[in-house]
Length: 242
Ligand code: FES
Image 1 (cartoon, rainbow, N blue to C red):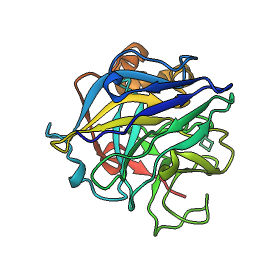
Image 2 (image 1 turned 90 degrees about the horizontal axis):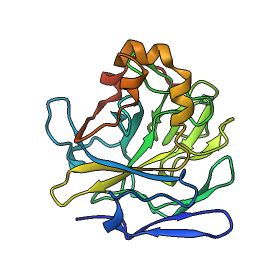
Image 3 (image 1 turned 90 degrees about the vertical axis):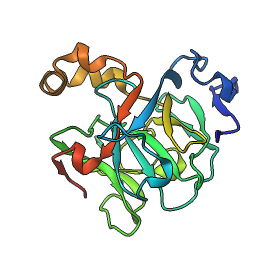
């Protein structure tokens, strides 16, 4: 099994919690309870119910799955190049945490919340104003592609650096989804690291939850067992990129 050596969550004041891989999957929180949360291990599956295999992912293509809640969208990306881990990041409140890199044989597979940390623009079945812009594509939000861009106010985030903010009004990274890559090449979502915005998200979009999920209570349910993972162009009718 390929896993990170370990995952560290660093609190302000140098308090540090070291999470051994064997503990992922149990209830274990950072000292403030907000920066690292484990949820059910959920396998990423395609629309036909077959396991997503890491080596079959198309590089630089936006894939979307919902995790840990039924209505919270996330990006799955196989980046163009290998990613080196251990990036120190900070939330708006000053909480520090360490993002420990990508998974997969090429160390290039990452996942992030598809809810913008600025004002909650997110991927939904009607449209998407936030997505990964491939390296060779131009964007108005940053000098070069290879970044996640929120078109609402042009914030850009670096997917090779834990979704650290590169430009625009966002004041913190996108939350990252901790992935496990197994010997059989399958991918599993196991936890959320960083400022997740789920609380504000569930307060803000009641009509949308009713429209797409049958109500807020159903939208807030946790995903269990498997998460359907599809290209963004299948998830959203319209993908708008700037
Ligand atoms: S909501 Fe994403 S940049 Fe403002």
